[in-house]
Image (tube, rainbow, N blue to C red; front, side, top):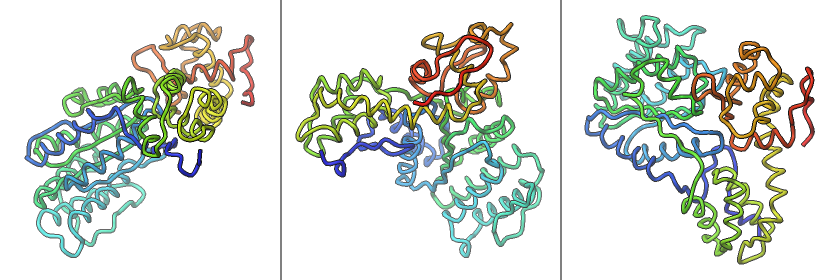
Length: 401
């Protein structure tokens, strides 16, 4: 069929033509915003899940819902190199100007601008925001990030309430925040919640976030809900394939859908990738089981080259051997001691630096003490096919796919 009319959209954060299976999360967010508008405290959200399950897509949908509800929004992605305090200052300035143009700032908006100015004057490296106001004295100027960020968010929330609007911060990949930064964020949101202000924070990241937030502040679970999203099942999974095709007057054979779901295990990114290739090899007006079987090598190659291989490209040879040892044990979760034994190490402490670096790089995560999982679905299968663990003391060389 015509590739130009292909409705499937595999990509990082690309919104699928049919966002299925996420109705509960979307409705919960609508309720959150409505309660904040009424001055009733409600938990902020941190959405967690593996790579490719649609966390960024959901975050983008939240942004649209917030804007429809008269919330001003600021969204960004955290990286290893993000200066968190400077980023929050930049986003806060954007929100402040969205609440009220600079030339018409009055009362609470002006007060928030002065608090933000004081906050930026305390930042290292001269990250002062461009606001033509005098800095406030005694607020956001202590040099303690948790206290000062709390002052800024409370001032923003007060300004939003005065303007009869709300504020939503949306941050992706927040597992990359340092512990002190995450602690400051939790503390600041606590200050906002205590004042019942129309400001919320929505984060997204890998499954270790509830544990990280709890370690940063023990009361995190009272400030945030942590919905975990994963593979689609049943009707939502089938609809993700069938509905986009129906919009183009194309149908799927039931057996073809069954085969795609079996191969992809319902992971949203994989569904979009398979749908794209099945469409391109199929003939109008139906996608058949034969089409799905013909497309499978193309799908496998695409996933290997563009989804899995990028992960192995970021690791050292020693780290690659560690994850190969994990995969050689079969399906996870993987005990740290079992991985060490598979590598021939005397104990987990001998390979702990490798594990720590892989967690920092976002290749694996630890759902609980002494346990490991891959951050990418089906990564264990990819490693067994392309980087099987080799005997001997030398790590394997990366193989061409």
